[in-house]
Image 1 (tube, rainbow over the protein chains, first blue to last red):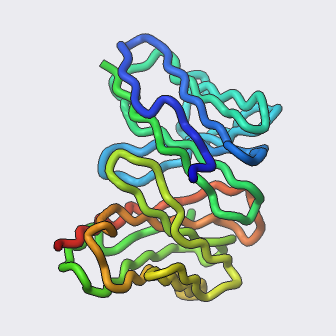
Image 2 (cartoon, helix red, strand yellow):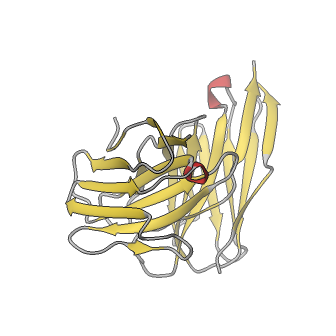
Image 3 (cartoon, chains in turn purple, green):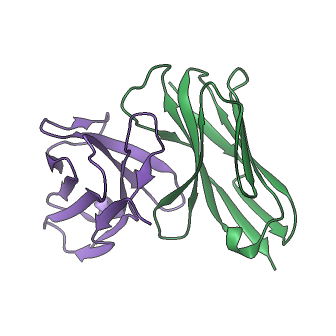
Length: 115
Length: 115
């Protein structure tokens, strides 16, 4: 069964509004979770590394003030897309692993559409 | 900078054929390599994980090989079935030491198995 749960699976919002996406590790504690973004017909690109109890680490070119990450507990990380624009429409996927060298497990993703 | 390339981008085969998907990476300093399956609009399912010290991994009809020195990995699918139709993604965890689990993905191979 799923070990990483992501919610919602699909969301449509208007330009200028904010959207929060949740990522939960279901039966293990994840001190680190990862947020990826995937445009249609393209591969996944890492946006940021979410660290429990500390600030997230963002990849080059990702605006930290636009994509707010909070990792308040060992089983939950949230990504908030602030002041969303149509170009933010994409597929967002989170991942986590049980241990450092074990397979990364991914959530089912969130399809964000900004109108 | 590590880059991951997958060939072919798309592949269509009749049911029952054996097939090979290719993945290459530019920097041989990797911690591990992972193959994923992605169904349309869905998240990723981990298929096989090969640690840098390993040469291959097998799971059912799937076999993945790793040749770090040449920067290549292959995913072999035996006796393909229509249910195998999906996009297959190859991803490497860069660095000879564990650096937190971030992955670099290839663009994927879209596989279609015809009944």
